Length: 123
Image (cartoon, rainbow, N blue to C red; front, side):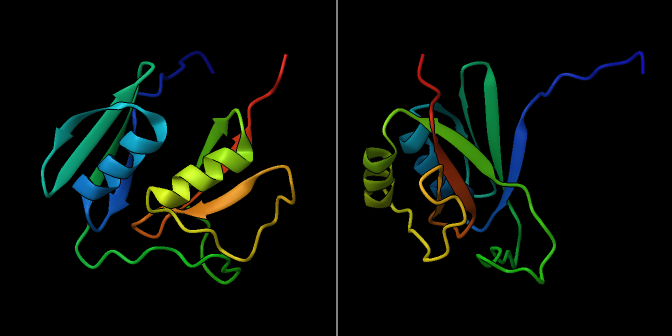
C-alpha cells in the first residue's frame, strides 16, 4: 500500500453529547471545543473526540458475548486505583465482570459505553 491515512478524530454515538463530552473533559482534562445538544467535541494532545446524538441510542451491554463488538477507549493512567476512584466519582460505574484482572479495569461511562483504564508503562 502506498497511501497512509492520518487519524483526524474519533466520533462516538451518544444519547447526550454535551454530558458525554463533559465527562471525558473531566477524565482526560481535554478542552471542550464544541458543545450543543446534537454534537459535542473535546480536544487535547492533537486529538479530538466527538460525540454525536443518535436518537434511540442504546449502549452496549457489558459483557455481552452475543452482541457485535464495538469500539471502546483505552486510557493510560499513572495510578489505576486512584483513577478508578476519581472516574467513578465523576459518574462512571464499575461492572462486576473484569477480564483484565489487575492489568486493566473496565468502567462504564455515564452514557453506558465501556472504556478501559490501563496503567501507564513506567520507565
